[in-house]
Length: 322
Image 1: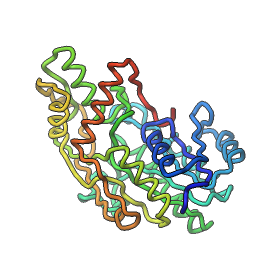
Image 2: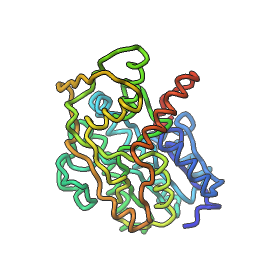
Image 3: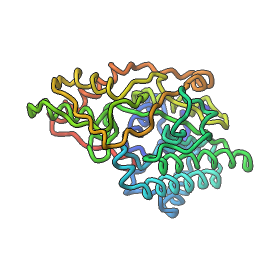
Image 4: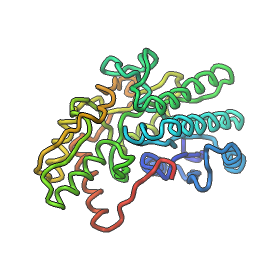
């Protein structure tokens, strides 16, 4: 699909991933983009969804909006995380069908995989078990949208694709410790401890779980590439293919932020899923995506962004529905 000249609706464009997705679309020559904020279009409200489709008449829809957060946020608001993520996607995909949108791109989540998925995670293993409990409501809500995409393709011939991004990080991330994911939380904790002269930082869990991380600009490029070149019904992992323990990650971030104290692991807090690492061969085969930013490079750029914005008094938390 040639995206230049297409009317493209991007949900969640005021959020972390969405803002970088807009950058990548504009770099690809897209100049007819509708990117409503939640105050303009609340996707949980059917009337708002109907209005945006009837007025803008999108030819391409990229659904990046989500209610997201780390383990603490997922535990505190499981009902909200299930309902809002499910209802937004269900209403949006249904509207795309009724308005005969040429292509619909839906972003899922790595949290949809079963808790004990064999590593590396292959798309074929998505249904072999129940997700890790602390983020299961969010993961299941997103996985339901895959079923909707596949059944709408089967019954209505709808061209809807489903992508599974791994844990993302980078500039403009959410650094609010109540809702942030692990990398921005580590960066903020270590920078604040360094500035305050503290010699200890408390971290959740025991450091043993592993995670895979993808730099957000690489993720945005992958989504644009898939929108242009992939039309399959099966889900596709979007990741770097590299696994690191939380303990080793904390060591990296501590060195890069200049924190020289020690970690206090709070094992009374949950670890989350034991391991996460993706098989990314399908993305490379289907639309030529391979991540290009190493973890060290991405961490340096993320830390620089955080420190520069804090120093300038401009730091803010980006929410996916802003």
